[in-house]
Image (cartoon, rainbow, N blue to C red; front, top):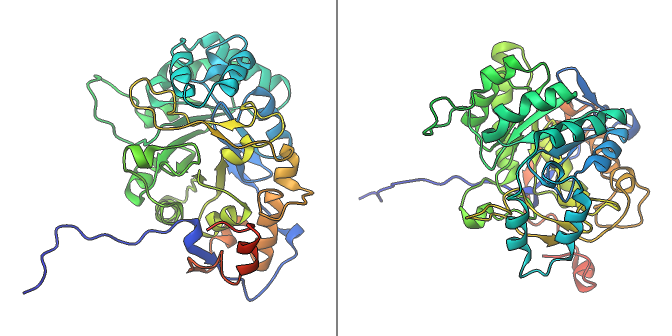
Amino acid sequence: MTDPHFKKLRQAYGFDDVAIVPGDVTINPEQTDISLKFGDVTLDIPILASAMDGVTDVKSAIAMNKLGGLGVLNLEGVQTRYEDPDKVLDEIACAPPQEVTALLQKLYTAPIRDELAAERVRQIKKAGAVCAVSVAPANTKRLAPVVAEAGADILVVASTVTSARHISKSTRGLIFEELCKSMDIPVIVGNCVSYSACLSLIKTGIAGVLIGVGPGAACTSRSVLGIGVPQITATIDCAAARDTYYEETGRYVPIITDGGFHRGGDICKAFAAGADGVMLGSIFAQAAGAPGRGYHWGMANPHPALPRGTRIKVGTTGTLEQILFGPTSVTDGSQNLIGALRNTMGLCGAANIAEMHQAEMVIAPAIITEGKAWQFAQGQVKR
């Protein structure tokens, strides 16, 4: 008698479960092309800073773009609720751990002000930077026209999980096809983790998709809600959806792996898994001058009834430029992320991101600790 099966589970993989196989041909790292394009906007480096209050404010968004990447400003955070967000950020950073979640819930009850959303966009544009802003689906219809008129270059519509079709009591919810047609700027949507969800989103006409549910260092969605897919598997599945759509239509829609990164090797693995770009949070929260003052918290942390995040202390490890380009004296892979990406692409013989997608990967959960006994003994490698 065969055993009955109600549900079969497949194996899924995160960054620590896999390794990249070097190529048969190598390329000088400086000859690699790592640019990323959304509509008419081209970034020199395929790196986005998360739309989280501890990561991106007006100053850091400007600095990020001047270094070639893109900082995404959260339109539902303290930047658009308070005239003086720095005062509020100081209060959050100084709060005792046992009181910080209640404080965040209180601070985030202040209303979002349309005029502040427009003003933050104008501040970024005045500095000559590309302006990307993020809003949850529930507030998109209200805020999208406001920031578009103010001059925003990219609109990101994101929540813990976003689908192309949403069932609610609303007579007419947000319809991405209509949103894309009404906006003259690229629309990026997230987050999702599966082939079918990603393909459905891409078909609506959006310009990019964020991949990842709950992997972030400050996010607790996986423990609170039990949902999520490890980032390597999620990226591979969604990259397949992107490629399917491209083969059918000739339109290429980039996917951005969002969250769960600790070091340069993780970023390189995301690109080998099929990512066109990556979105980083806690890594940039560690930059000198980051709005979190050495702390980082998730977008769902201030939820009034079911917080799905926690404030974490990340400290300050270096400047934003050091984290992206070095020079660095640290050996843990947390700085010179672009150098790591270019070197890995060179070792894989990948001249551009599309070629990096073809790099071979193997299941190798022991690769981080293999032969590292001395580093264990000295506390340099964590299990």
